Amino acid sequence: MAKYGMVIDLTRCNGCHNCFLACRDEYCGNDYPPYSAAQPYTGQFWMRVMEKERGTYPKIKIAYTAVPCMQCKNATCIQASSNNAVYRRPDGIVIIDPEKAVGQKEVVSSCPYRVIYWNEEKQLPQKCTFCAHLLDAGWKEPRCVEACPTSALIFGDLEDPDSQISKAMASDDLEVFHPEFGLKPRVRYIGLPKRFIAGSVALGDEEDEWAKDVTVTLMDNKAEKTIKTDSFGDFEFEGLQPETEYAIKIEHKGYAPKEFHVQTKMDVYLGEIELSPNP
Ligand code: SF4
Ligand code: SF4
Image (tube, rainbow, N blue to C red):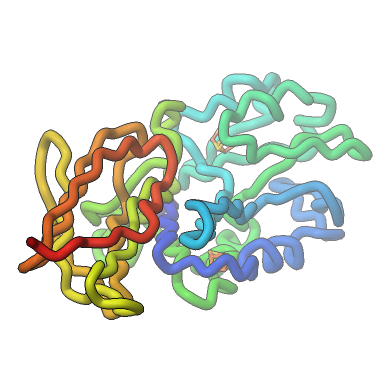
């Protein structure tokens, strides 16, 4: 028996929303008993693409995080339902029964990931099913995975050691979205947004010249990492831990070094840093 899982590689996600649109196309106006009733045309996001603006002007980035139902092993939605209205299939997919779950609004707030939506007209909680009706019909992947142009969504059978998903799940970079919820999700991530520290270096004695190949070292209490500024004098350390103290040292032969102490409460742009020539 297959056990399905998904890896969402956010380093490949460009925020195109194709996954969201494919989901809409599959479910709006279409009932798939016994797994799902039609999704309304507005207000529900079974595959939601969250957008978060990171940093401050002029160093701004947009982070996209695609969020389906996590198909948790410790699914709080199952615990919150009555009459077996929410259950797990043998292949691991968590289903809200569209008949039994009528009136069970409490199921909506039981999910800390907030991926269950209330259908007011049908008085029904609804969510992503990993396209269970398609998998039963022989499809290899849900519509969102098929629609993703960058292969950011990897889906398959976790029991098959040769499957792409099993290989992706073995990655050292794998992360759980909100591990503090403790729900053991079958959906895992690569590249969840964290914090960056960036800056731009200029040489004080060279007007309008960006300082290329300047050595920039990042230090915390465990390790240090050194990079060089690019052709525009820019540097960036990405994927740093939030709420952590870091030191940044900037060194260039013939110039006085500079050091900064930074707290990653948020993403940090140090601005233009001018190095002065040694006297
Ligand atoms: S993400 Fe929420 S809705 Fe999905 S299985 Fe987990 S608890 Fe249930
Ligand atoms: S389709 Fe793929 S690239 Fe586009 S938003 Fe969804 S996950 Fe990201």
